[in-house]
Length: 139
Image 1 (tube, rainbow, N blue to C red):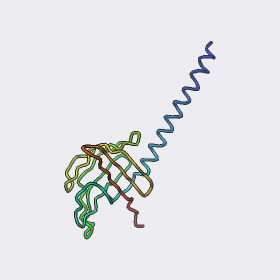
Image 2 (cartoon, rainbow, N blue to C red):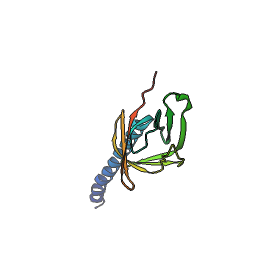
Image 3 (cartoon, one colour):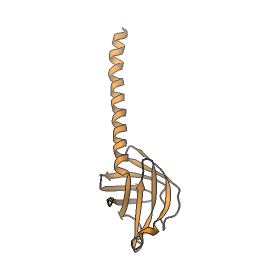
């Protein structure tokens, strides 16, 4: 009788282990793709002349801000904090400093994430879409 229970329980346990490892691998892949700096190329923001908005991700931290195009050394990082990824939801738990009229302290749904493109959106009083391109390191 104990062998019958083992044969019933073991396959279910293996399925759970497989699903959890798949979820972890998918999350890790998303974190790896997110790491680095992203320049905003589209979104529901008032475009400020000569300013580039950015998100920058490390393994578990996010930094947001803007860079003057004509003087990149005067970069302003006006938001920083942790972020979390769960089921294609990017939760930004950044200090909600205002960054030229923008604050980022919310949940975003990842619409597309590749090594070059990040598109996120949210429904908060309307549909808002943010589009980013990956900033390539100049080596």
